[in-house]
Image (cartoon, rainbow, N blue to C red):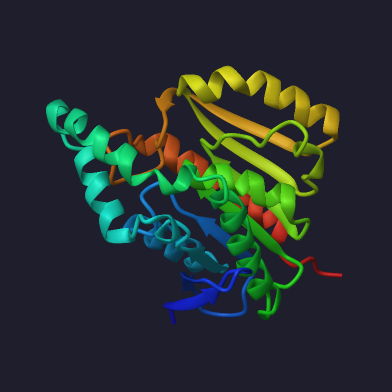
Length: 251
């Protein structure tokens, strides 16, 4: 049964987590971190897709704490993905204002603490303990990188078009990383050579896939940048990656 559960961050504040459960004993546990729009319907759908593949999935809402509840996120998403360019441009100031809380200095610390609380919960669930991965998109991809650097219980991390952590944090990543990018995403692509070099020096198991015709947010099938072929390929690669690193091993 899929449900939304109230969790508690280390500072005592509450946040919601959408939990998608597989039909049988889980193959592992996955923390799924949403895009900058928050825990909207698309994120819950992706969680359900992973659960259908046998994983116990916990998708936390970590943006409401910064003032962006799912309803607001869905509204902003609709505006910034409107076919009319004038509508998209007009929405930009509102988007910037809505994200003010995310840029607050203390927010990242709170967000990572909340994600670690989700990992704590997964560790206590049958079929997930010791076999936990993380996947995230955009904002969520960035936080998956940060979670992997702050919690060695993450055995496999899959950031989609996320910004890698600062170089001094990269050596703290102990799990394997599979990162997806679209070539038409200049800021992330420009930074990628240095990220690869730093990952290599740190000894991180780091694999990247760059899709030549894709840009940012190519996986979101409800957005104007969606690319079906690249999304399908990334989905299969992600399932294979999680299968290699999270699935039980018969002895």
